[in-house]
Length: 312
Image (cartoon, rainbow, N blue to C red; front, side, top):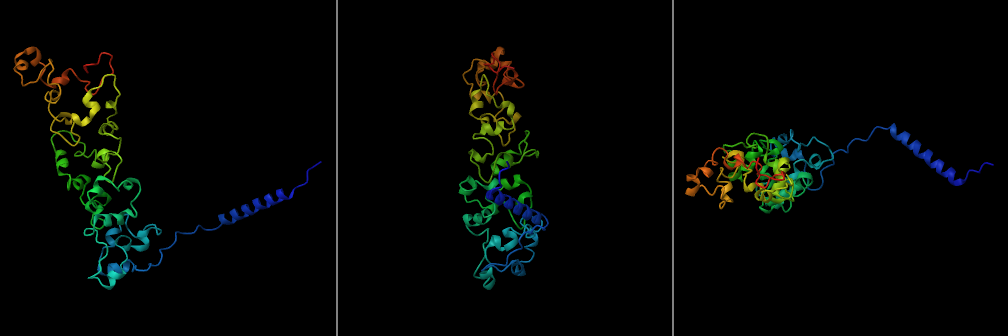
């Protein structure tokens, strides 16, 4: 004998039919476009008023992501110039006494707050408390919204030249004789550093130490090794200058002097400043060509059971 259809089942079926009819009706409708730009709010006068005096300032933004003719939901599209420089009504009424936000002149925290109202995620999420923020560096010290010369609205043509405005000693090293990836265009400063902020030392992008940053590319030097070389465990920059060097493989000093900064009491050989080394052919004949590296080639570490001395 069939069970009678209950009121609850009928009610559920009616709800399903109502949802289905609503979906069919929605499928036939044209999607609503983005909301149009809102009328200027109180205190705002609109871009047209701004460019009445500041000729062509709006056109410099057209080819950039700051251009007004983008997604109409963005603040830049809705408020134009005033989205960065603040409400302009008071300035329009008395241009001499009332000035909008002038980024080169205002305090760093005020200028940067304007930029951070949009640029506060991803690369820029850790700006607060970063080394550059603590030193009152402004966004406009490196970037120019209206007259940029390089990518990402940089003031200089290249990232290297932008960083060189402050870090002259570092960028001078990059012009030294030996192979330097930044100078050759294979890397940029931001390949290793996040200039907008990082949780790591020295604004490094990767790892919590310099070693971890280096081995993110130089994986064959990562280890762990059965026999580890103490300077390598300490820091790659013990032996290498990551920003440039006149020595082979960007070493801090030439061989054998680099090795003898630590191995000063070794009997094989002792320092080159001792007459014993230069007079005794058994030791002196090893200080030629690649010097110590003629024999000790696995200086980053060895996994050979007999690799205590990092021999090839």
